[in-house]
Length: 87
Length: 382
Image 1: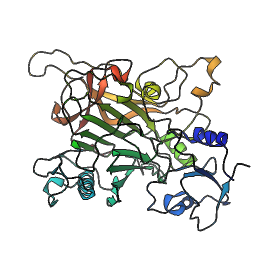
Image 2: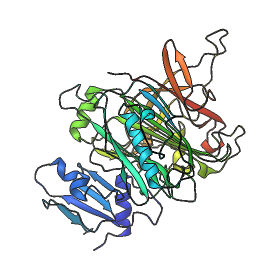
Image 3: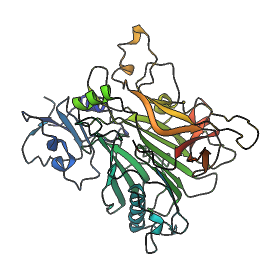
Image 4: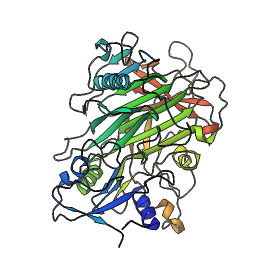
């Protein structure tokens, strides 16, 4: 299930994401489920791979969250991220 | 610090390999090797007409990936340690700076945290210097290495500055300017903030674009889309203890105004002192020391906020950056003092000039005078 327009606007405001109205419409939000903080889980290589230079990532340990644009899924080999679908 | 001036070797060629070679030369300069003695085999920068001067940054402050060549761009990522890294046990803040040369979108800089996330400007990768995509409003060069005039670089332990000038005539050249400078170490605040979130790094960045006017003796450009200015710390801890991202968008007149001058509004954008909008003049001292040019230390202002008690809860001023601090080895000097790379001296210390943006008016696009900034040519270790 995709996020609603209002939910996408709230995410953009939370992370100060800017762009034209047709940009960043495919944002995905993932919540961190690991019981302990592991820095490696928050790195670009772990999340989407080092070659994905054109994909933007926003993250915040305090919000326990990462946000991606233009990704179908995360690599997440330890299965610590769960997509938030807005419900 | 070292200073480098780069000129394209073959401006008629529009190939990615040129861009790759250019990034290699910039990488070498930052890492402290004299790029003008390198061999570039007919591509990249012109070593014979280039400049490399001053002493290099301390080894280990910068680490840089080998430039990567994609189908339509070349880019590299610079990891920079804060100059005070390790001065307190466990305090090792770093930030990342990506320089990209794209065939369609030109040169651009993005600042990331140490997870390669949370870019500033927070814009689509397919965008120009400040993140714009409309027309050519903030595009600096294109066609890889073909369409630009020159590049200037300052690299030292605290400060990295890059100026890129597009090709064209005096009245059509476009100037993009970027500076990232470490804030003076404030152990009580910075150690605590780094403990809250280890993506914190107290370095502040400035972006500016002026289209058509920086080399123009009679500026005539008043298009609001042709002047951009933004200031921010990529990641900061707000006054509630929460990590936040900088509010630095595609800084046109609408948003850039709050970075551009001290404004009597309830805002959360960052700015600097001296205000970019104000003029700075020299003193008419006679003789060998005159005229005297000031070296005014640049101060970062995390939140450009005017607020009364009744407005404390207003959202436009909420979640701003409380951090103030001196931006190290970074000075404002006399307007119209010179061109990029010119030298001024204080005693035996040499400073290199960058004419960064226009100034002198409450609106950037209406400004006429070249605001000049100075950086010591030699490295200043701590």
